[in-house]
Figure 1 (cartoon, rainbow, N blue to C red):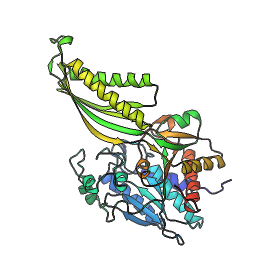
Figure 2: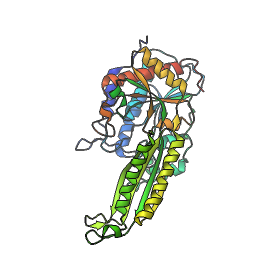
Figure 3: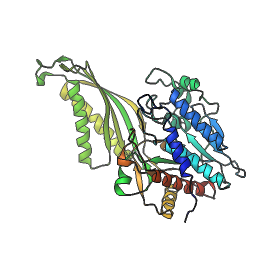
Length: 416
C-alpha cells in the first residue's frame, strides 16, 4: 500500500492564497491572460517555485516552467506536470490552478523524501488556456507544440484591442527561451472534473482516457429590419428567427443521433437590438464537440446543411467563420492504467472518463504520452465562483499524481 502523501496543508493553503489574487472590490476573481492580475498570480507562483529550489524558465509565449533536474538524472526528457493559472471572468479558485499547484507539491514531496528521479520533473503553467481575452484558448500549449506560429500568437489582438506580445512584455513575462525547448518524456495533468459525473456516481478519481474534439464557428445571419407590428410573419426576412431555428435543429439532430455529441450557442447579438424591430442581423457562436472525429465531422456537415436550408426557407443570407478546430485526443493507455492502479492501491474508487472540456493536455499529447486525472466537482459547477472540490478530494488527486509521477520519473518506464 502507498504510504507517502503530499502536504495537504501546504497544497490547500496555496490554492486558497492564489485564489485571492485578482479579486475586485465586489470579490469577483478574474485573472485574464496578460493582465495585471495575471502578473500578480504569476509572481506568486514563481516565488513558490524558487522557494522550492527549482530552476525557473519562461518561454517567449509566457509559459512558466519550474524545473527539478535532480542530482543523478542523465539529462533525459522530463516528466511534465501542470495546467494554467489564468481564469475566466468571475471565476472559481480551482480550475487550472489546482493542477499547477499540485504539480509543484508533488515535486516538493519527492524532494522532501530524498527521492532522486531518473529524469527531470517539471511543473508547467501555460499561458492563456482559457482564451477569454485572447483567442484561441489553450494558446500557450498550442504554440509550445508547434501548432501555432509564435509570431502569429504574439500578434493576437485581445478583446480590449491589446496584443498578447505587448502585454507579456508589459507584465514582464515575455521570456527568452523558445517554446518547445523541453521535449517531455510524458505529461500528466490533474484537474477538477468541471462536470457532475464523479460526484453523482460516487467516484473519487477519474482516469481520463480521451478528450472531445472541438469545433468553434461564428455565424452571421443577415435579414431585413422592419416594423414588428406591421410586417406579416410570412413576409419577414427575420435574422433572429433564423438564428433560433439553428439552435433548435442542432438539438433535435443530436437527440435523434443518440450520440454523445454536444452543441452550444454560447453568444448571440442582434441588430438593431430593439424590442419593436425585426432583427436585420444575428451574430452568434456555435460550439460543437464529440470524442469521435468521424461523428464530429458528420455533425459539422449536418450543421452546414441546416444553415443552407434555413437561409433558403427564411430568406436570409448566412456566412460562417471558423474560430477553432481541434481533433479528439486519445490519451496514453499506460498512464491511464497507472492512474487506475494508484487509485486502487489507495482505496479510491475510479472510473475511466472522457473530458468534455479542452485542456492543455490535448495539445501536449501531440508530442508526448499524456493523460489526465480528474477529481469531483461539487454539482458539476465550474467557471463560476461556486466552483468547489472538497479538500479531501483535492488531496486524493494529488496523491494519485504523486504515485504516477514516481512510477514514470523514478523508474524505467519507457512510454510509447
